[in-house]
Image (tube, rainbow, N blue to C red; front, side):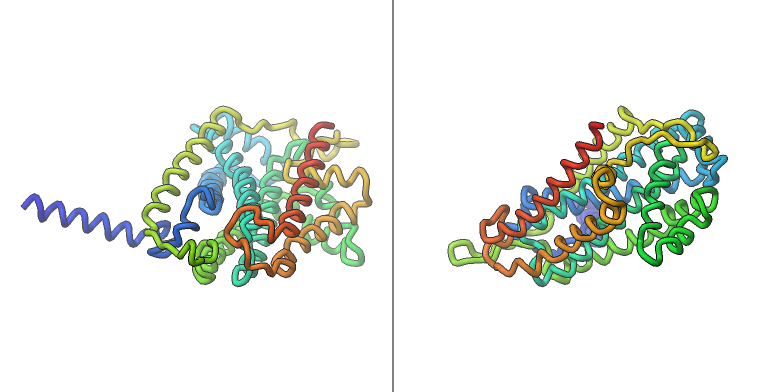
Length: 356
């Protein structure tokens, strides 16, 4: 009797495990070289985890946040100081959003340095770059909702960049801002995009991105050779490792939320004669620094677009099958050098802006 009950409960656990969405993100068997945690570092899964935490905490914040210029800042003050665990939830929302961008950037770097963007994964590489842009916009729209001096300055600079677009700039500005200057209409639009538009687009894009990974043959791995034939392992080991990484990452996010909550600046005052220049959100510090040396059209649009074109073109210029699935293969040094140069330029400009 004990044995039969044991088998029955084991069967229930096995059924639940096999029906799990997270468990079935991977095929039943995985190439051993692609299953190593030190190969992927779980960066794709960590990006998904941070995105889910951002959405869950964001849903809780919508119960108290009021998207008007008069109530936005006071509602955040209420969340921070009055609502039970409100400050922690808002802090966790902030850190999960920042780590989503960081994990996604590291994931893109891993793809480049292992050659995982080569056909048939070139389309998914382009999709991943599009998702990264959505994450940046998602983060930026959330930053503007604080309606303090820092966020309103970033909103003014960001929306004014629309005006420099030849021919269509003014029309795009009015479409985004909803008026001749940022106010209630702009805040409501950014709130709608942050909570609904960009969230739906990001979640849908991530789902399609994960599906394409399965369609394109799963996690990239080196070509098998006679000296190193293809070896398959069960997904159980990788799944267990990813769960442990997710627990550690969640604990780290909660620790950051408790130790370093995001500070609010002074409330924005649009009636003031001028707003003291502050630092842009860290994701756009490089553009802020470029604006010191280049015209707005070049700093805000041409240079970033050129960088994106280079990244999109990496699979076109890298047709070497050799070295796929291996870190820093010499056969792909051109694409790795281009990516590293872009990353170094962004980091350098960001540091320069942060030190001013």
